[in-house]
Image (cartoon, rainbow, N blue to C red; front, top):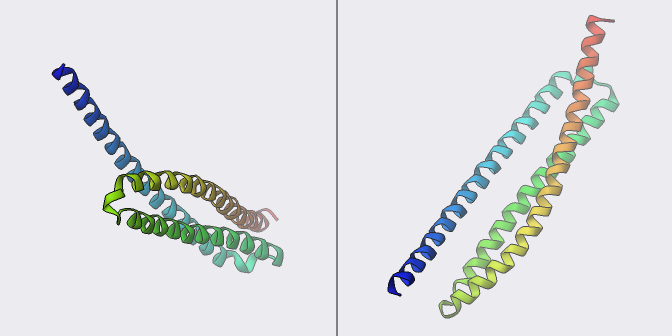
Length: 160
């Protein structure tokens, strides 16, 4: 029986190690995806304003208004989410710090904290999904206004 218990114990240890490795991998992947998304969005905004500066004199008042308002909505949405994300992370870390202060109840407190954290993660995911779509769609909308104006200007020069 000792070997069966030993085998079961080592299987539990291996499962725990595999779970920790998986958590680290997921955390790393999230961090990399987040950094990549921020880079792409930053490049998109820089590209938009570069093209907007170049073509602004060729745009009519309506095109200037719509491109500016759409990209402003995108930027505000993106920045608001980044502020929310920083508050979310700070709150989670402060909550975790308070959770581990009571060494007598640390196991029970960590379990309670983990359950609370799951609920916060669901809310976080919903906020992320909403702001991501708002940011992407309005940013693309502003970009499409510029693209339309740019193509129309080219056709006017070369065709008309």
